[in-house]
Each structure stands twice: as C-alpha cells, then as structure tokens.
Image (cartoon, rainbow, N blue to C red; front, side, top):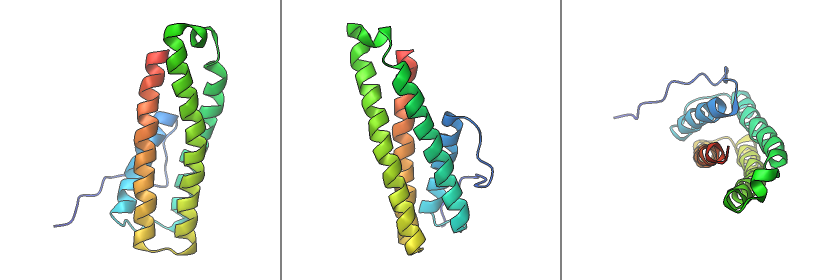
Length: 136
C-alpha cells in the first residue's frame, strides 16, 4: 500500500515565511516518498526557503536587540531567538550541502536525506516562529 503524497505544487511557492515553510515541508515530505521532482525544481525550492529563512534572520536579529530584550523577562527569550537565527544560518548551509549531495549523485537515498533534513528544518523554524509570536 503506497503512502499518500501531500498535494503541493513545487513550481508555485507561496509568499511569506510561514507559508513557505509549510510548503517546503510538504515538498520535503514528498522527497522522502521519492516524488519525481526535477533537480532544477528541487534547487529552486531549496533556494526559495533558504532565502526566506536568511532574510528573516537578518531582519529579526536587528529588532530583537531593542528595549524588550533588555528586560529580565524578555531577555532570555530574545537571546534564545537570536541564537536560533545563528543556528538557522548553519542549517541553511547544511540544507545546501544535502542538495549538493543530490546534485552530485541523484538517487533516492540522497533525495530522502535531503527531504528528512528539510522536514526537521521546517519543524524548527515553525517552533521558532511560535516563540517569536510570544516575544512580540
């Protein structure tokens, strides 16, 4: 019995970080299930989500250093959120590394590894965004 594949159009990513993360998680899930995406489509999907995460991190690092971050209550959360942004830069590099493996040797196991990492990254970003909402 085959696993049901989430319906997602890899060629039409949505706008906005949260929607992109949800979209990329579905794309990643389909990679795990060995959906036959073209390498170019996978590259573009990785590029879109990577750019959105990097842009978010740069913009939020500036805003988290404000007066709320200096308070005792907001300070710990601000430090955690800023640490997440640093970690996400490393995670985006790792995402590109996994894509590079697929690009050099495109087979199911490598696509599944890329998909699994994409799913973990999306879950981490989603948790982070929830904590950011608590900070606001």
